Image 1 (cartoon, rainbow, N blue to C red):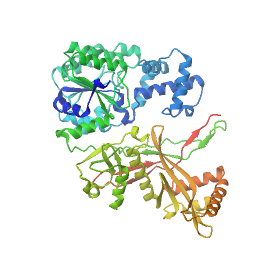
Image 2 (cartoon, rainbow, N blue to C red):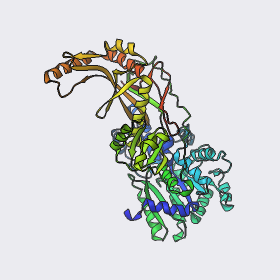
Image 3 (cartoon, rainbow, N blue to C red):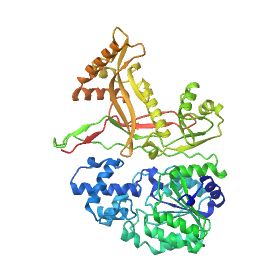
Length: 580
């Protein structure tokens, strides 16, 4: 595999020289940051739907399809049933989609619903800027969404300049290519508004011959960058293979972009290897996501140096109201301590400078008495705040460049620099909103009822808890009602987790007897908190932190002349359905 991989800096230099002669082929992975499921995501969704209908179980039983334990349970069902494609095989998508929805009309409705509400990501907008500068001319996609069209309309303030063609009018693409009417956009599997939607093994096998011919002709005359595409459907791969043309195709090369953690299908490796053996400049390029790839490209090219892309996050996502008043007691609903965050930042400022890791970044911000929110990633420091303040804080660290960095959901699923930045910004914004100070103990964060000033709900919390704090053992130990706050990413979204607790302050001078008295006090205080009492305390803390009412609230960190952070939070905890 190593001999098939091209160093990323070499790719950037080649791209600079060949940009206008390189087409792009985008797969589902290029739309993931916009909230659209990849083929792999859809496969697990299909498996879950088939499993639930066969076993007659509720959706909540397999709600977290990212959980490996859930996936193992689903896969075991299909392994035992036999007759299904092997897990990870190229046939899975078409097989499970067709079994889930045998009727083409239902498949169309599924795709339509999956596209609804999606917005262009950083990568789509960046690609539109390349089209505008004639640094890209032709884009192909296997996707059904309209993200490229929307990005072009946003960047160029019109979509009429883009010649877009799907299976309903392949001749339109052929004429535009022959007349060099750039830019061109071809949808190999159709537009999800199109009647000729292609989506199963039978449909993919009979791919429209005219559109395939146009793809073949362009591949024989252009190079190709493939991003976010797995190579799982034979109809496209057969065209790409034919376009090799015994070494005469792809005159500007083939660059198949993969993420570090991904292993390409065997057929894709064979394709790249075959191209190399024919003398074609073909290789895999290891990069991050689609957004990260385009960010690196724009930062490198002289024509786009300094280009700032602001993502349009103005559209609000309103929560769907849940009415549980008429629910049967046979299906109880359990209240959770998770509060949905329906809007959160999608971009941050990226500072390229000379500094150490995350600890050094935090120390620098504290040393400069700054209110910046900053974290460390491999590419540099990411931050929310005023650009002038950024320059002041990091002026001694040889700032080379200020750029933008797209925040992807994939990076929020684990403890990354992006998740740290989002968490710090959220907790800081909530502290400003509610008036209480955040208190850190190791990696844990608390709002303390004895630190700061209540903007909301002091009396309600006092009544629910029976007291907010005091001292023990002749004043040697301080205790306080607190609420631990955490951030988590589950079910494709961010959640604020709140956990009311009782905290005691001790130090090295605290005797073991006093410590035992304090522990007994905390234990006695918490043991009396049965369901109703704890529910009242949870309600009170939600009120204290988020304020009055049940409508979504908006909190954030001001960006000044830079990039700020804005969150929209539903001040109602989630409920989980539990089957009887």
